Amino acid sequence: MTCPVEAKLEAMGLALPPSAPSRALFLPGKISGNLLFLSGQICEWEGVPKYFGPVGEGFDPSEGRAAARMCALNLLYSIKAVAGSLSRVSQVMKLNGYVAAPAGYGDGPFVVNGASQLFIDLYGEPGRHARTAVNVASLPANALVEVEAVVELH
Image (cartoon, rainbow, N blue to C red; front, top):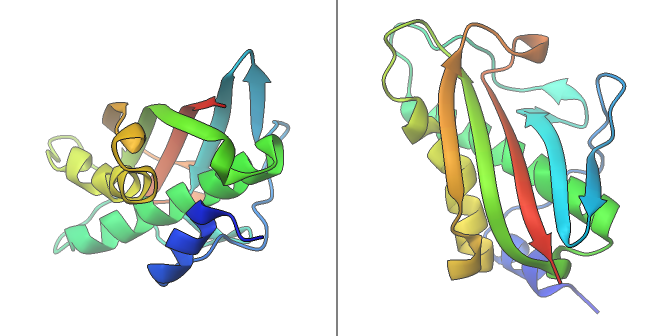
């Protein structure tokens, strides 16, 4: 039986990555009570970075949103790996997004919207979340975006 959330992903023309390997010594997520704390995921596919920072001259914000959406797909992979099913998510509690950008770049929150929008599209109102979006000097593997999350499980 197909998970309804994965069916929505497929209908959107998206899929979970086949894997999301860790770059260092950390777990993809850890459950405490009914909360799943997810480690940050960068914009990579099966361990290969796809979008690079920092934001530069002529940066296309739609590219940034696509990078953030890729981070969210990696987070969804981690949810499934740790919790067993994407259907176990009762609500998305919080996202933290980091954008590699120079001082003064003011559109980091709009970049992180790519991740937020995917969770809202998949989970509806329970996908709406509290959020922080900040710019940083650099990210692992010279990635453009990194996103972490906390979700509540059924």
